[in-house]
Amino acid sequence: MNSVSELSSRSALLQWAPPSRLSESASNDSHEVDISESDLRYEVLLSDKSKEMKFKSIYSGASLSCRIQDLKPGQEYSVCLQVHLDELQGAATDPIKFFTPPCEPDQPQPPKLLHRTKNSLQLRWNAVNDNGSHILHYVLEYDDGKDGEFIEFYKGRGKTHTLQKLQPATTYKFRLAVVNEVGKSSYSDPIAYCTFDNPPIQPNPPNLVAATVQTLHLQWNRRPKDDEFILQMDDPKTKYGHMNVYNGRDNFHICQGLTYFSDYTFRLRARNDDGMSPWSEEVTYRTLPDRPARPSKPVVKGRIHAHSFKLKWEPPSDTGGAEITRYILEVNSGSGYETVYSGLETEAVCDKLTPGTTYQLRVSCISAGGCSNYSDPCTVTTDAISPGQCAAPRLQGKPKSNSITIRWIEPDYNGGAPVLDYEVEMVSPDSSRSIVHKSKETECTVTSVSPGCDYYFTVRAVNRIGPGNWSEGLKVTSGAAPPIAPEIPVLQCKSPFHVYVEWQEPPCNGAPVTEYRLELSPDIEEDKFYSIYQGPQINYDVKGLNPFHTYYFRVQAGNSAGFSLFSPVAATITPAAPPSTVTTLRSDSTPRQLYYIGIILLIMDLV
Image (tube, rainbow, N blue to C red; front, side):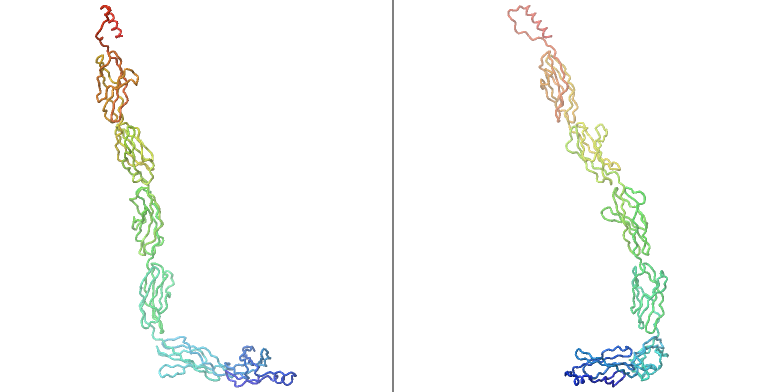
């Protein structure tokens, strides 16, 4: 490398010549090597003092010069050159050192505003590169806008300054320059800052727009000079005092996550570039009460009756912040819940209930916060009672002479317990009463009846509590039967040829006796009897009999149901009668002899 020329604070020109060894090789080597300078490529390597001789490539090309740009003023640099031929690389030259001359400082950034009041502005700025020469001082100028010219008001080494005795609400422009031993930097870009105006006056307290259980929606007025607002809230339960809950430009805020039915105190202040207003007067708002928790599960108090019972319950563990104004007790018997009590008491009587019925009951409560959920339901079964009255029994079929069958239906209401038995009571014709049936069947046949008699039947149901009321009665007349066998007939012989027979009317067994049947037999044997009379009379003259002859009589009565059995057999002997008139005599007899014979015959007949 031949030289470094045209050295300035930020650039330098490097120049060099082709390698001398290239021409020597061409004159001394026994073999000719054709190497053109255009085939060579040069690489410039640069390092500054701060990098401890760590070089980086800043140029690569065929030119024999290179202008280095973007150097730092007042900086020591080292530069070397390296030659390349295709893939071949020569050794780097020895480094050449050079120094860039210092210059005026870099252009500074505009000063920044640290603090301001109505009459002052405090500015601050950052240090800049000194470009190789120590900074002597900073120059700060301002323009108050009157004549458009900047006026120097600070010159020194410090990097902060406060400009006093300024006009309120006035805009000032500022610019900054830096001076070192070489010269003065360019001025920074102008920047404008304004002194504060008078701060806003005290605002009105915030207004409540809407309240819920956990939120308060607040709103306030925005005035022309109000830029931002600070809202503070005091929660007495935390004892932290007023805490910021909002800081911003909106004129409303919703405070969330609050406790139900609690008081909160608020105050507001406005803020703009000129400062903050005094706090507004404090105002207190309250969140709405929450729905109360559900009451406890109701329990039975005292004895459970057939038609009523008493329930009690505990108030909710959390009322939601408001007093309970009403409890509502509902009952469900299977057709849906119905309200049976509404009031402030924590117990109630449920009456007009159906015995032996299971009920579900639940309770809820109401406050200013709303209605609670229902409690867990409790189940209560009322005590059973005896069954209801059965309907009057009905006759099943036609009454018979010796049995009556009746049926009935179960009662409309079993008293809340299953029917275990049915009892049937019978009133006999002699007014005696007896239970003739006791079972779960709804039909019975009574066999202990007499024909043609009136009987009175009632029925009742029985459950585990006891029997119900007797039903209305059913009057039944048993069926008719053939009459009772008549008593033995009375016989009276009127003559040897005539017997008068008389008998008494027997019990008719429910149907009037309409006829009698009188039978006669010359012998006691059953198959010898034959009918001699059939009619309604209770006597009969039997004629045409033989004298001195035994006759057997019996009688039976008949009605619409049939004939009775025969009465006991009555027997009689007809009296003897005078002999019959002699109509012929034998011619060989004498009167005396005939007379004798006649007497003998008469005696024989009498015997």
